[in-house]
Length: 386
Ligand SMILES: Cc1cc2nc3c(=O)[nH]c(=O)nc-3n(C[C@H](O)[C@H](O)[C@H](O)COP(=O)(O)OP(=O)(O)OC[C@H]3O[C@@H](n4cnc5c(N)ncnc54)[C@H](O)[C@@H]3O)c2cc1C
Image 1 (tube, helix red, strand yellow):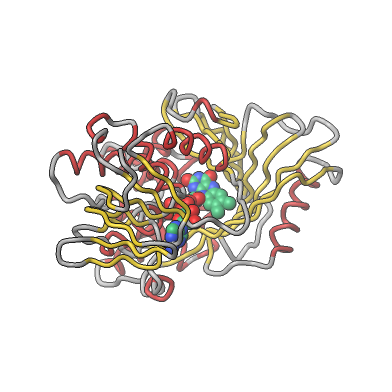
Image 2: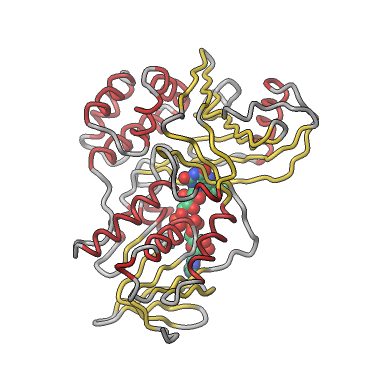
């Protein structure tokens, strides 16, 4: 195919959602005669984070996984629950490996082009769609856009809104300190008592692990706060002060009921965080990027509206759960403890992946019942912000 600045589809942003979507398109023979352009703004600093997700059985990223687990521990200040991940394995991969892998596949396809440029705006003229880049303009019939709208940070505040903010270290210890067969899903024993905050541990080897301190709250903390909790955790539960930090990662992920999907138009579909693909109540998005990308392909083939509209029941449940966490920010420990203690892991994981049967959703709701949920539910009937 001759290089051209006119394409059938343009994907703005080669991050998690843009690459998931590209990967789905390039693997589907239906799209072999369509032309694709991915426009990616290079970051000034190369980042390499860990992406984790869970899925049943084997999956398409297994070749590039850093590690997978079939068991986890959940700790609250009142007890421990052993979580069974044997059916839904918990999997982790590095973002750089994921990028390399998908970009290698893109390079091999003649109908795909990946370029570095910064998209300044997208103009919807009468019969054409012009993507205005810093270096050049590009034309497409449809654009998938992972840029967040400029005014979103103000708009989001009109809805229920928390941030998942965290700092993690990959450390190497001199002695064998970790049980690499089991990871820590959430540990609430050491935390800021006013907020939902917990430690998360992914043991890669007996002497190497990612330890992360995470908050679900309104505002980020100073770096020292997360670091102090990590140090205290390592000292108290692994009895170690003797370790080398080989890598660190920091993130802020929006957890909000803001209806991102409304930003899409007939010819421009918002994707990723900008499309509302991050699960509001957990901040996870790896699996939903995959699921929604496949849904987009299906919509195109069936001639349906391309954009993704969240399933009403999950949107509503996320809004309630987020409302409780937002109004009673110290209650996360109790909320997640009840959910995980009173339900089999498989039911919880299906629920969080939005793959539950209605009867299982009801069982989860019943297991978490409390006056706080009832109050937020009543408020939700007449208010956007809970
Ligand atoms: C440290 C860290 C750890 C995380 N861990 C997990 C995890 O374990 N599991 C999970 O599910 N989620 C995780 N997340 C969340 C996940 O990374 C995000 O939800 C996800 O990246 C969102 O995908 P996206 O495509 O919307 O955004 P991004 O992945 O950020 O991609 C957007 C891309 O668009 C590009 N871009 C921006 N502006 C322009 C422009 N004007 N022109 C062209 N390109 C542009 C950017 O350079 C960027 O690469 C983590 C996030 C962080 C920061």
